[in-house]
Image (tube, rainbow over all chains, first blue to last red; front, side, top):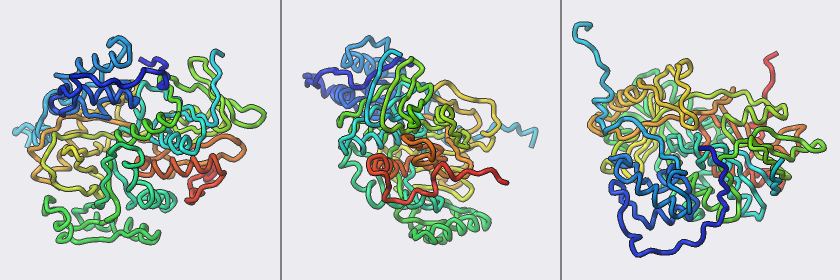
Length: 111
Length: 381
C-alpha cells in the first residue's frame, strides 16, 4: 500500500478485555489478547503479526483466522480493516509431502 | 519540502541491521529516526534467511564479528530484548557425500582454524552420533560446536520493539530518494514523498536498495542480487538442534522450536531466470522447491513424508568479494554504510549493530572491521 506510517503514533495503553484468552488462530494457538498486545509492541501490519506470533503460519496458512486477525489489529489501531494489506499467499495451496513435491514428472516411454 | 525532522542519527532501512543499530544507539541515549521503504519492518533479507548464526565457512575478514557476536551478544539477547529469539548454540554440521565434498570442507576448516575457530573434520561415525537421522550417503562433515541458529523474523522484530520502546522513531512506507551533503558533511535524507530528515550521522542499511541511495553521493558498492528460496514443513516432533549445511550447498537449514523445518536452497538457474518477483516480495520459481526437497531427502530419508506448508523467496545482496561493506566512508563525513551482507547478515547482525553504534558515538569499534571498509575496492590494473 506504501502509506507513510509513523510507528510512534499514540494508540493508547493496552487495556485487558474479558475475552483476551479466546483462541483466534487455532493451528498455532494464538489468543486475541496476544494479538492485541503485539499491536502495542509495535506490530502494526498483518505480515509483522504473522512473523511475530505465527498467526496464519500453521497448517491452514490463515485460511480460517486471517479475517479475524485483521479485524482485531484494525480495531486496536483505530483504523478500517480495508487499510490493512493481507499477508502474501504462499504456495503450495495445500500441505504436500516432500516426496510428492520433489518428484519430477517423467514419462515411462522416455526412459 | 514539507516536514523537517531531526535526530542524532537517521537510519535508512528497518531490517535487522537498522533495527539493531537503532536499539544500541537509543540504549546510549541517542535520538534516532529509522526510515523504511516498505510497509513492513524487516521485509528484506532479515525475514528471508535460514536463521544461521555461524562462524564456520566465514571469510577471515568477517569472522571476528561472527565470533564476537556468538561469545558476547547472542547468549543474552532474548533476555536483553525481552522476546525469545529461539537462539540455539548447538553446533553446525557441514555435510559431505563425496571425496570432492570432503576436500571442500577440509579447505574451509583449515582457513577457519587459522583464525582461531574451534572447527574440525569428523568421520561418518561421529556425524551419526551427533545426528542419527542422517542417511548413510553422508561420509563426513565439518563440525563447529559453537555455531547455531535463531529465529530471524522474531529477532528482527525484537530489536525493533525494544528500540521503539527506547524512543527510536520508525517510519514505514517512506522510501528514500537521495542523500545530501551540507557544507561537505552528509546531513540530509530526502524521501520520495518530499520529506527531509536531518541528522549528525546517516546510516544506510537498505540491502540492495543501498546501492541506488548511496549512488546519490557518488558511492558505488559493487554488489548484485541473487534469489534464494526456502520451504517450511508442518511441525514435526523434535529431531535435532544443529544448524545444517552441505559442501555442495544443495540446501541449508534447521528445525525451529515450533517444530517446523526451515530449509533454504536454489535451483542453480537463479542468475538467469526470468522471474524478478512481485514488489516487496520476490516470487518463487516452480522448479526450486522440488529441487530443494530432492536435496533434503538424500540426507534425511525420513523427512520424505514431512508436508511442506509454505515456500518463500528472498534476495541476497551479494558483494563483489563476498563480504559486507561496513563503516565510515573516506571523504564523506557523517556517512555510515552497512550493506552487501552476501547472505551472512543475520548471524552477525547483533555484533554489527553494537559495533556501528559504538563507531557512531565513539568514532571507533572494539572489533576489527577494517577489512570490510568501502575503500577496499580497486580496479584490477
